[in-house]
Image (cartoon, rainbow, N blue to C red):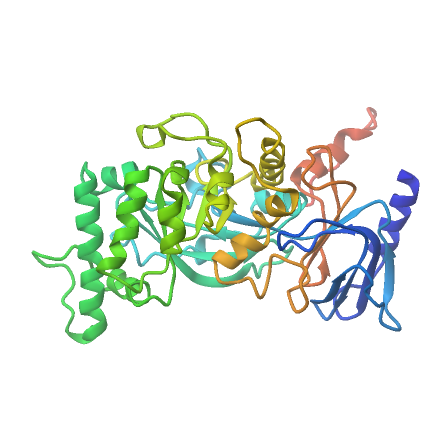
Length: 433
């Protein structure tokens, strides 16, 4: 069987990429919308978009076909919260663009110039089935980190899918530290900033910037205008239940805020309030230890319980190898499936778990009509696996992004190949770069 699969992949690899009609047949098809896998399904792709996916799908005349019998065919994984492309080596400051501790700007910072499509982590995660990612800046000297982006992980230099896609802010313990030492200070700073943004919006030419009552310069004020007007989402990192409720309450004064919460380790304790407020969540999947005081009620059942209460929830990896190992999100999703079999615990069904790393983060970011599933009209981000993608032992055979086949090589695979069959009589070949 492995030989047959290898032959099928070889045939696929020979295909020229995007402009043709392609039918992937016979595999277990995952739509990514929360439904269960479809054995023996077909996926049809044309001009970089999904035409159809599921069972009883007609193959268009003239389509090139790939037999994926014995394999799984899914949408590409969407990294719900990452720092991909911002870091090469975390401990080497010259290669780490996550935060700007000494900058005079905060909300006005934009991650786009800092994202490096050639960062080693991009290729590694692409080979793990990640095709898109939410990339957020970090904070260091202020509560606002700046404007994040949505990227693709294609092997080219055009990674930005949506620039300035959201604003990122730290509240909770970390926000308190950034603002001067207490939650009172962080919320006062936050309200002052939004009020100043509203002043700027009413009269940009007359806005004076920093004064005795304002901590916001013109660049940061301008960046917060679409946030307070509700045209750009505001991603807020909080963990504790009290902080979650305090953030929801901000809508009483700023009703247009499009809130998205990340982290949210104690979310299950206020799940009904989150659902009633219609605030989506990108949560860490398996936090179950009180690593900080704001996570005392952490449990691995957090996502399952929030989902059961009606909260729109996806998996993110804030503070969890978020710059390098987003490919582990499939493992986290699989563990949430297994958790459902533990007495007293609450996990997710298989279909829900996969949606939590594909269509649900896309929908939370307002991109559900473009990415995250194999529904007709979506971008043809397609991954073919040699087994169940939520099983740790499964590997990626093929990755398409916008219908274009992607390389699965990385610095690690090149190093492996360099030393795998070295001739001891000769020195190793030099790197290409």
